[in-house]
Length: 309
Image (cartoon, rainbow, N blue to C red; front, top):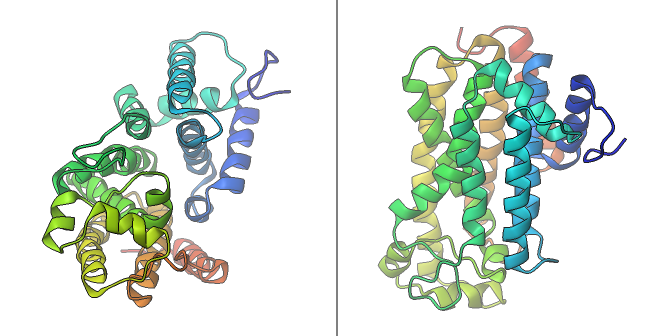
């Protein structure tokens, strides 16, 4: 039975297919899914699989960008049709549509998620030749909102909350995660013609887009470049404060999942800091053993019902 075939796919089978995608690909996210109740874990795996499919299309460098745009548009139209009730054998579409209905996830949020993915398919030169850049931190924040904060807003729909202040805190938590990703991936992104360090911050620290690309090519780091990355790290750290405020607003049975996810990402930022922001000579990561420790601690807190009361 193929995910995209014509054979009938049951909802349990669809969720199982999404869980396998999440188990294989999700890395940091999957650790947090494991401490959720099963129905919420299923929904998170479906959402992740949906995100993964969109990301894979956007990042498939075996296709030229123009072809990726066409494939993405076709995929989005197929998803919209499935969402509207058209027959589909796509397990991801079936599972994510079921999760939307169960947890009241709006079409708008998922449309914004796809919009964030397709941002990387739109040329954005802003005076930097063919390199994709963002002029200001505010522009970068909007990008972070679409690719990460929207994910956070979807997640808290699954986690459950009643205080509307949770939505802004989830938005800022997503920005913290995405800034961490940006710091970790500076080298790889520059190699792909993307410099997410905003131009206003680059200018403040006397660093050029060309210099970032040279660093990705093996040039040695200097003090001003470390200071630039430290400044972006400090902004991420401020947004991690929103995650701490968000935790007690989430339904009790989901707090451990958020705690695990924040714990792993925050440790990743700590490893970048411990390397004195040298993200060019070696890619920062949190070792599996440390992730398992965080998972074990979160699971113990969940079972013991000790997360924020």
